[in-house]
Image (cartoon, rainbow, N blue to C red; front, top):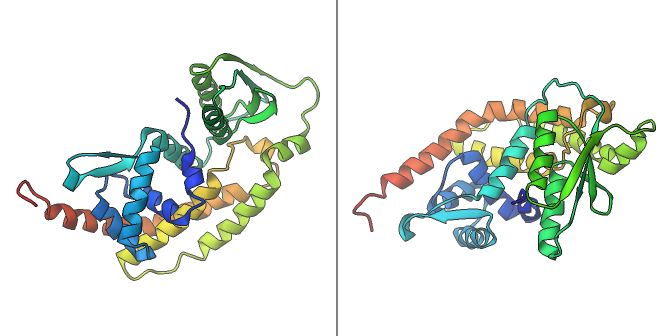
Length: 278
């Protein structure tokens, strides 16, 4: 129904954050044995990994399918939306001009507390910020995406949306406070510097995968807070753009060797599992 953003709650637990990151980097369904092997270089035990996999399935973060001895795990549909949202933020934003308009989305909030919190978290992830009880704002940018997200919420909850400009002059300071842009910019600049310092040569595919997983998790945690705003609202704050560029350079260098480790683990694992196995 709504974008499930429980992955951000998971990221408060470093082990579960790393475990979810394994699926993101691998880009394919994995068995428990494969996950154990892939996360082992970061010091996570097999018992701990199995325990977290069970919990993530129970919470709806991961899906599990297949025969008991060869079950495959994959991010659930809701989490896949979150993953794609983060990947979108890690790409350079389109050179699309902002027409200065905003979307006001007024919804009848669910009576159930859990559903209400899920809706609020989903709106927050999509850059809608509370302006009044039941009313949320964000710029109409990128236009097609922003309008699509507003229609998505209206398809699942009673309410209405308006698009327009403020009558008074836009208070950029108030917008900056609404999105906490100063803190985001500061954190992004610091993280970009740290990412660049991780670009040393890694001797093995296994160690490279571990580094990519660690760095990718740190970047995803912060980029997930990016509300996707037009450049006009960021002003002179370039931290988030700097972080995207730093991570792109880092990941371009490490991805081929790191992926070799994934393919090696999967090939070895599935080479032992055949029709007569077990």
